[in-house]
Image (cartoon, rainbow, N blue to C red; front, top):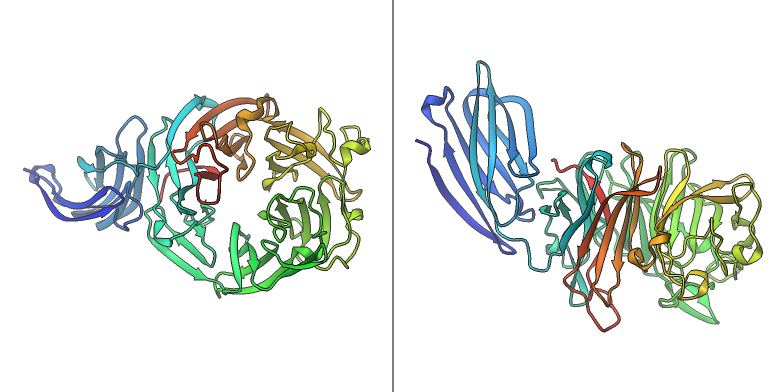
Length: 516
């Protein structure tokens, strides 16, 4: 007869963590024990670690049973092994199938793992459309941050095709916002606070922790370079600009290259060197936040960096710190530099052309009007390079055409001709859906390599009325939606202007396999 022996209890949020032994039956042909430790690293409540001992070398696979099973396996034959269990359902006595393969036989057993409900402030998730045949494989990862009285508590979430949360990481120990949540090349998770960079495995085990100089403050984006070093958006303590006859502290306008192995900053770029810091056409924040850099993309073809600045547009700089181009409406661009005494920026502005290569009219170039087949990215986020070399970006659309009338967000693809400083719009999605996908801040767009679909994330929709986010996967062949989900936030701050840390936000989302 098999027995379960409780060992210990711990708490996290409202989750009870526990361990137990399962002792294999003697008539199975295999003697074995299974020790189960739920949430072993105390920050990943829907995971467990199985410690399996056998009298014969075995390979092991485990499967969380349910409508959407999640499986992990180990091909290594051993008599003493640990294997991860990911994808447990919350608030449920989960049944987990354990398969032990050994020379001459196989033993299959079912163990039970109890979980409790997710935190009460987690969102409700509704899957609106599901065309599995045409979707990119994987589950749905949310880089989500919850309102916490003027700060944020970060807890990235992964949900399945039925809208069930199957994994999350409790990062509240950091005491402030941590992100963006992303998988790096080695399969681990990377997130960053203002001066701390964390690396975890999917079980929540801390693999690495890097501290940077107090002179820098990380914000918005951390990009892994091909050599596994990092490129970071940062602000500095001692950077000033001259504006309207005043000297003011600036923010969010430097990039740094961090050597991860040495935890050392080896290069720094000052974006004010290349742009007009006095240009305020789209700066609705404080004066020192003239750029509001929010994303980076590295182009390995020529070692250049595409930078997204919410208040200025997109720009491209070389590794040796030379400006290549600026993608922004041609209005009010003057001299570069922190004191406005650098070079003229106008020659670096890209000219918008149609499919025949003909430039659009002046009022379109300056952004006062949009064409049916072209518009600039307004308040952009998350640019990335496509396999064909084009750029895809989330066009948030706040104050489009310098008014508050044309309110829509979209995913948009541009082709840049660097030789003649022109660019054209190749593809877009979202414009026809209007305010339904309109997100004035945050948000994301990703290319999905297996299907060539695009994943669009509107992370901050209608904060004063039914506050939510939308995640849409669309086929670029015919602009049909193959997946769509609505994330209904709990902290909505209805009736007042949303403030930092007072309203839930979805910064980005990813399609992600749930495996360690």
